[in-house]
Image 1: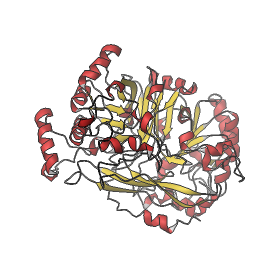
Image 2: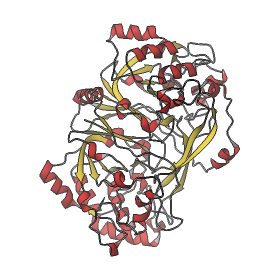
Image 3: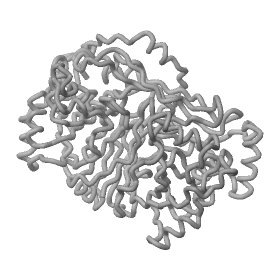
Image 4: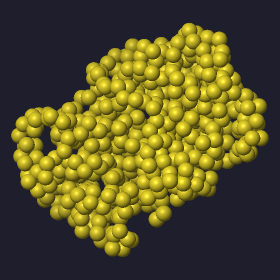
Amino acid sequence: MTPTQYRGKLTVQRSAAAALLAAVAVLLLIDHRPLARPAQAGDESSRFVDLSLLVAPDYPCTWPTFPAFQINHYQQIGPRSAYNSDILVMDGNTGTQLDVPAHSVTPPNSGFPNAGWAGAVTTEKVPAWQFVGEACVVHCTDLLDSTPNGRSGLITQERIKLWEKKNRPLGPGDVVLFRSGFSDKHYKPLPEGRGFAADPVAGKSPGWPGPDPGCMEYLATRKVMTLGIDSTSMGPMPDLAEPTHYAGLKHGMIWTESATGLGALPTTGAFYCMMGPKHVGDPYSEGRAFAIVGGPLAKRLIASARKKNVVDLSVGLADNLPTSWPGRGVGNHRQAYMTIFFGKNPNTRTAFPMHMFDSNAGTHLVPPAYALPPKGFDSKNYAPNVQEWLSEYEKKYGPRGTSDVTAEKVPIAQTCGPARVIDVKHLLGTIPKDQWPASPEITKAEIQKHEKKYGPLKAGDIVIFQSGWSDQYYKPLPKGSACMEEPLNGTREGWPAPGPDAIQYLAGKGIRCVATDAPSLGGVEPKRALWTYWALGSNGMVGVEFLTNLSNLPGDAYFLFAAGKIQGCHGGPGRAIALH
């Protein structure tokens, strides 16, 4: 955050404010504390630790002078829709968040102060290796609530040097995490949660601890490129916020703000990851932070991170890309991805960006509650054609389940594991034109063919279908209409998609997450798609859709995906990478 943001001197443009009005459903509270989960792939000595805050309208998840986070459950299972989906309205400074250099560094040759090469690094340009590394926890609990109101306790380079003397020298591949316990203590439902951001900014309570510019400059000499903090912001109050940001970001650093639960990590030795949706051109992003503690898995991933053996598998999100579901025909589209500008960042001379978008935009999570109704749902509330589809489905596969598992309830461990990429490119071009709209079906036999050649699938594997679809068709509009609009409307063959039989087979193998580089796991045929999603949800499985760049994955890759921890979200924009 910048000094102007601290003082609350931001003016939201009236037109943007009007655009943000949306109904916000009342959501049930859940505990925001991190959960430790067993690691997958048979590594029982490792565990996943969620280090992210819960994002919900009644939590202080938004910067106090910014437009508030909103979620609108605009599509609900019933007569009008067989699916649940949401409109999200949020800016990148929401919940646990990622800052990248363009947050404070202006573009090179811009003529503005603080210009430099790092000013061109927005969220989509950060190299994937920078999201990961070995967690090095610097304890600063003595600074918690130790200062006068409106002022921050300062983390200096002397503290870092003492840490190095006690532990080891810091260097490339390390992620320095400042742990004071601020978010653990102050991130609570409103109004009590005002102590997390609003009251410190207003000078009514002590500020959060933060590093001073000298600390950042010292870490830069140690070639540390990734940081994290469990304070509301990396920048100390009242007047060092921007100097601290610039001191680190000008070197190309990135960092996590508003992490939580850092006390669950050892001082060194844990694998750390922080990722957020790939908003094209943005200087920050909402995100998800987590760690893997103990066992050979953490060591293996740390080694890969140090070698920079990391591949980005996510599509970018932008207004001119086929980021959102267009639907078939007219008036059946989902909320388009929209960028809304408000206020002005006095340091970069640009407006602040935020976005209104569907919860299934871009690379995203498909939780069970996307297609499964809650317990007690009367299936007579479906549209007549969906009632017929359900009757057929249940005769063949048994009762369709119910679920309340939305994005925040899906363990991160479920979307991480050894990547088992199944090449299905040979299915392209196999559907006669007179049968469009249709998608080639990925069958049980296709999966078994892969197993015969490469070995059996194992519980905990992440099965990823590679068609090359997004690599070929995820292009700026109007050319990008070939990605979804044309296949859905029958002017182009659809993308390959697994049928319910394939999903049932994978469930029997212990697979808990299925992914694709196509827009959806369901394909373009409505009945067949719904059957696939019913099969996924009824087996407690989740999906990750709209990957890209799978051709760059070697055979030993470990897949990581994390969606935002948004309460009640029936999708989950996120980021996917893989280490090898």
